Length: 398
Image (spheres, rainbow, N blue to C red):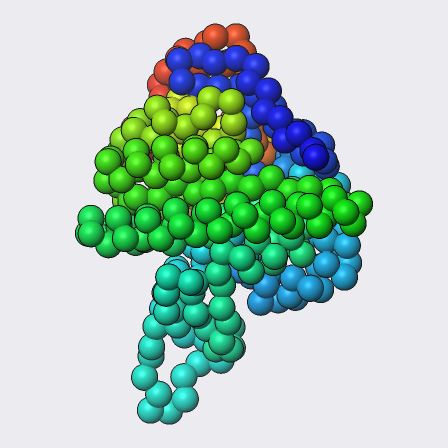
């Protein structure tokens, strides 16, 4: 049996520096994980991921289940061989996408006179849903989501959860949380069975992280954190945040759950990836982060900087010969001016989108690495204060 060890190297307040070990290597924390939803980090190739210092990436179970199919990935020998990536990979459970895409109509559109209907039906056993691509019917439950993720073959997999909307009333939030707890127990049982099969087949094992839920209700989050910690899995995730609630509400929730999570296991804050959220999440004891924003914003001409988001299409950058951020050491900032990047984005040039995406990913990856250095030197409070000296505080009002 593989030992998914988390080596906690130092703490500074609640901020933590550590290293998590998988059979495809280890990664140091705090860490930002680029998102390759469909086994591709948009606009970025594998060599560039290595170049920018990425140590682990994320793939999406829901999208890969629909296309090309988890059995296709299994035929290729799993996600690592399919995309030729030999470092750790994490897959989410698909639960967030099942619920968040539940009210989207298929891309094929509605027939004349056809009424739009929710594509999701939740039961105690699992979730019936329709593909947002073509409307085909599918079903997820705790067991088959474990099987699908086993076929995909990531190193770290997520338990199936119900991600209640951020504005859910407390009654529904509790109902969804308790169902998530029951599903988590079923996930743990199937995960153990699947790892036994994987060992028998001579392949690598997978680490399971259950997901803390409870919307923004402190007592529910406390209950959920305690329950998920009791399952004694290799790590724990915090879900259902950064889904539209005010940032300060998210930070308050983290202030609650940080006290009830295991200290000897990594904590993964799901779907969170802005500079300010990394700095504040790390301050509150979170270790792992992911988000599609770096590449999504990059494709729309927005760059992360230490003085806030920069909209490159602004006219004032037309003749600007300076880099996106003078303190960034990425190849984009070393080689290209704001004026040139503005021109590329204005002309819808693919290269402009790629370069801004690269810069944004590099920025977050190295923000996490610099935070780690500060923690190891017992200087995280100083690091955080310096960040906020330059970064606009009005983002906290959003």
